[in-house]
Image (tube, rainbow, N blue to C red):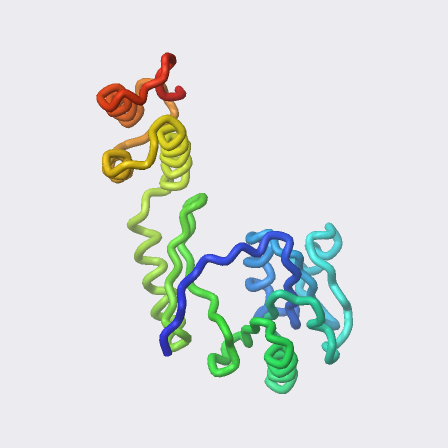
Amino acid sequence: MSLFPIFLKLAARPCVVVGAGNIAELKIESLLIAEARVTVIAPDALPRVQTWAASGDITWKRRDYRTGDLEGAFLAIAGTATAAVNRAVYAEASAANILCNVVDDPPFCDYYFPSVVRRGELQIAISTAGESPALAQRLRKEINALLPLDTGEWLMELGRLRREITAAEPLSEERKLLLHELAQREVCGFAECPSRLRARQHAREHGFLPADGIAQ
């Protein structure tokens, strides 16, 4: 099966998780990181899930799943320990064209959760299409060990400098090459950062530098 890799915006979108134990907890957390509007349906929940509910981060319906619980959902996750319940959730989701993931049951998944390496806004996602989550986790650990811990901060500065350049220079092949060049260099927030000096030099060479230069 060929999967389509995307990064999906879930902020404020309604997502339903059926289950609140070990199977579902990490999935709930990943939805919260993405700022989704999360409803959890389960008669019992782990302490962290209860804390999220008490603080208002999630809505917890403290009962068993019922047909109709997915109404209005953008996507769903079935993460109970009972296969029949999980597949009932999947059946409802499929009938309503709601994307659904049945945890650890690949044939009943419209999408998979990848293993993810995070550094700030940088995310590197690894999927084996459900064939070997253990391999995906191993690769995640290897990439995590190779990636500098400050990559997130560097990316933030690189993004800030990119926005300054695109505001000062029109789209061109030269601008594209400059942005690729800067992605190879050290970027920092100081005015005399080598990458900022290079950006100002480029703007002067092409007649795009405003009177006060690239923003500092």
